Length: 452
Image 1: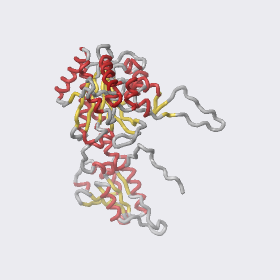
Image 2 (image 1 turned 45 degrees about the horizontal axis):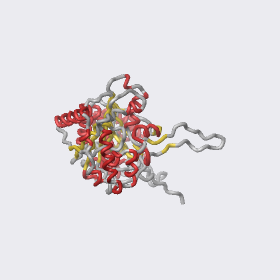
Image 3 (image 1 turned 90 degrees about the horizontal axis):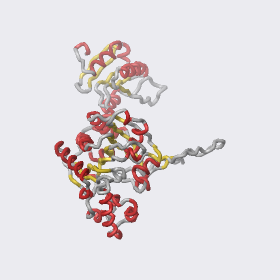
Image 4 (image 1 turned 135 degrees about the horizontal axis):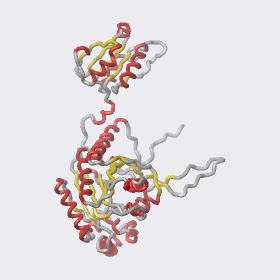
């Protein structure tokens, strides 16, 4: 018995009846990015491991536990194994690759503000659950070149409008500032946080006890039940901001209030990546359980410099498409949209099928969505008849076709096609020579008495 292959754990097959929902989300996202002046960028699915160690942080869960390594092919006989100088990993997040692409391709030398968006697969090795897959998909934006809090507000406003356009109800926006690297700002907060957690070390999980040595801010992001009560009582980052960061955070709040975006300050919000400075934010949907963050991001003013470029402020977000789909309010027939066609051609005999195939090709060249039944007769050598008209009409109804073009022996003899309007429930004939032009005009709404 042959082995039955199944998809890898933590992945999913997106089937035809689901794709229309995905396309809806992606098209809405591209639409809103266009309104805000963002341009699409596409980066490789795998990058250097060192890129993420340097930017995301070598003590984060992403780098320590969740990256898929990409290796060269095994050596064949007569061909030595190729050895790469760098270790490659599948892309575990979207911002660092975009920053690398901006720097490598000199985009900052062409314009002072670079505004980009992406739609990409993201890969993380973790325990699969609803809204968290080993291969999931993100849409995100990155704006590099300005430290103005008005740009932070624009990024948040874009995410807010996009998710509301997806008919997601019950969204909550949480906001915080984790300060900058000036000694009187985040370093002071980090020390007080460290002192607090050292006193609670016995209550922390194994990972968080290790984080005490590397980055105590990560403890605030821990999802373990034993750590969360301890984290909730920890010092709040916004209480330690330097005057410049206080001003930045205050102006951001003013902008969001002026835009009419409701938000809540969460003094323990830090996000899970080391490159963040100042602004961090999350959009949460409480109907999603533990994985309730749909969109998250913040400011990363030191990222380009960390990669060897000039000091360049930046801000952006990543949004999980799977979580958007889980939170979206369903709309009627949304899963059937991809199957809708304009014209269904119904030939009744093999001779009629020849004309039907030509007609299909001609209509498609006119940008008319058209299809036909390709079922073979049960006794293909013993009959000239194809599937019954009744059966083909059922298929046309299922495909929600506007017109059905019937071609039988009578139509071939008299050199005309029978056209049936499935919406208005009427029928007429069209000469073969006029069929393509008249059917196209009818579908495009240019109707007149000569069409019937």
